Image 1 (spheres, rainbow, N blue to C red):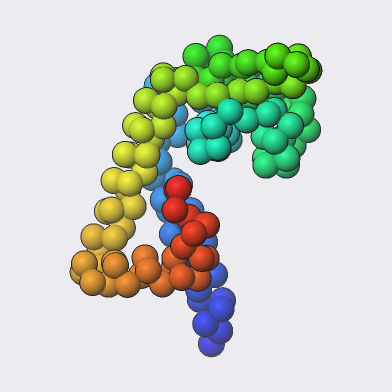
Image 2 (image 1 turned 90 degrees about the vertical axis):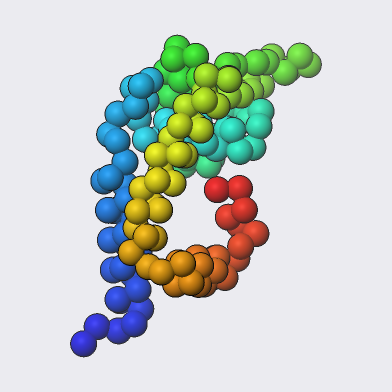
Amino acid sequence: MESLAQRFHLAIHTIKRNIESDLPLKNDSQITRPQLFMLYYINKFGNCKLSQLADKMEVKPSAISVMIDRLEKAELVKRSYFLVDRRSVFVEVTEKGKQLLRKEKAIRNSIIESYLSKLDKEEARLLTELLEKMIKANDIQSL
């Protein structure tokens, strides 16, 4: 018999994998999921230094530069330079990037709602509140 921890892990892992597989593999701008994650992060925290993005994504700054190049080419982000020290590069999401994020969020929410619809409203509310409690709701307010 599997432990409760094992069952919980399997359930969380499976629901995450199922939701991700239901998400469209490509979008209109042809950016990858890691690039989309980076776009979410930049939008969430505003003007970001490239070094912050490298730390967050746990990759080398050169890898971030390549990803930002692609996002900039697609007109989803724009770079700016700190006036005092031009070595400091910042990046921010453009209006086109924000539109893409809104579209992707609507798609994701629709998929998640289809899973939640398998529960009655009270069960869905309770499940959400319990998960929020487990991960400290203040950590997810901006998702």
